[in-house]
Image (cartoon, rainbow, N blue to C red):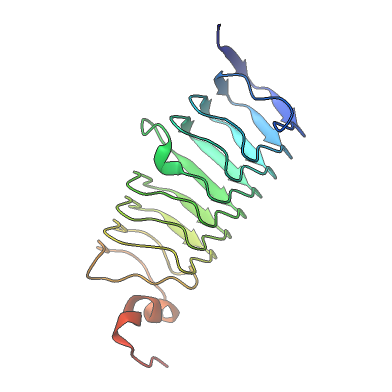
Amino acid sequence: MSEVYQSEEVFDKLDLSTKPLEKGTYEDCTFKSCNLEKADLAHINFTECEFIDCNLSMANISDAKLQNIRFSGCKMLGLRFDHCNKFGFEVSFETCILDHASFFNVRATNTVFKESSLVEVDFTDCDLTNSSFINSNALNAVFERTNLSKADLREAENFRIDPELNQLKKAQFSSQGLSGLLGKYDLVIS
């Protein structure tokens, strides 16, 4: 069975609960208001694509290639980015809900998390060098052995990061974020 190649296509209100997405390569495509919840996206190559107002919660993205992918207004509960193909992995998120997602051991340098919910996201062993967390809520997100060198967390909210367990060289924090760095010491910061 041959794989499809789609370029510069717009998929509007696609519902994968009734029909699976064909395996292959999708380049410079736009997915708008699509229901991809629990969809099987394994082994599919996405390059230069944009997902707008889509539900990708619990989708299977095992060995999927995500190269320069923009997610905007998407619901992405429980996505396992740690199962994606590591080659060329590059994503950005704006006004997305990524709660309970996993970036375990993912190289996600230069990633933008803008106005997104990152509740209980696992960033263990993740390389987030030069990434930014603009007005994003990282409540109960796990940062352990995470490389946050040169990351911008000045506008991040509710994070807890232990400086002894993570790389923070030249990372940027606001004075309001000090409690997120010093929380384990049970200090009163005013």
